[in-house]
Image (cartoon, rainbow, N blue to C red):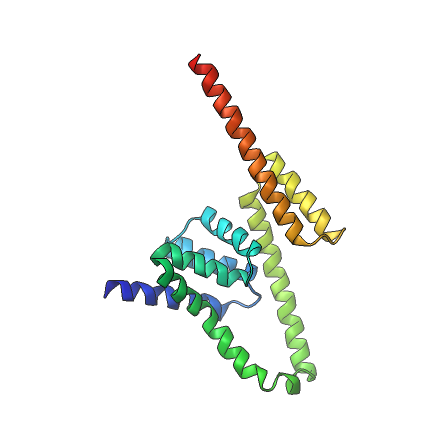
Length: 192
């Protein structure tokens, strides 16, 4: 009975996040942080950043991927299914309702202005999120170089983000290997 309660807690937590945030994965980050880290203590800041990074580089919607990771961490495959279902329920209902008459209302100036206002608000939210994300992620000088190089390549040279993600993955692996080799050499020299 306790496991069922935990599964429904996962479902309703992600239903709340999916229902009250507009703008996709990054726009959901503040609410996810508040609900998952501060309120429920299910994950840490670092885990949320890791889930976002992996969710961004895997197929599918980032917010859905993150909800699946958190649910899986909490309760395995069934937890992943419940949290994913919670995340997509509201969107699925809204899309089904809107699909029938979206073409008939999209020409109204009121609707166009409302959508423009929502887009501006989401842009402000995402700017705030990117700033906070960078503050938590950039801890060393080479992190800053990677951030600036990635921004330059994407913004000015229109390089697809896929290449940035793969290059960053390889660079991270290479730097980790170099650091491990250095630590191993230091340990060997101390033993001699």
